[in-house]
Image (tube, rainbow, N blue to C red; front, side):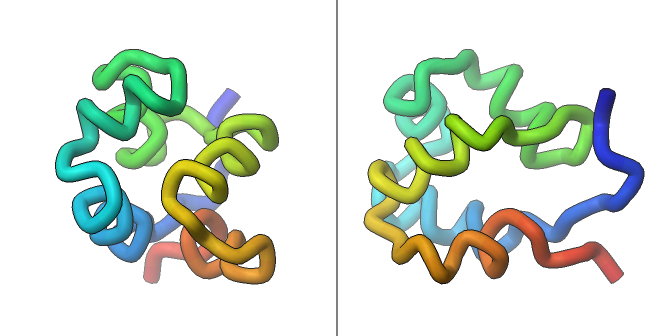
Length: 75
């Protein structure tokens, strides 16, 4: 069940573009379909803890930046 709080993933989308080129490429590396990734980025579904940790590796993020990329509330 999706979280009741909507998150702003604009910073995540920018990092995906910077590191992977496209959401499709990122989804492939993450191990999900482009449609599944789209649902997550559009707040229709939640990122799992495993997906977040894998994203940190794929996108070369720091663990302390997880909240900035995955838990910034939409205003």
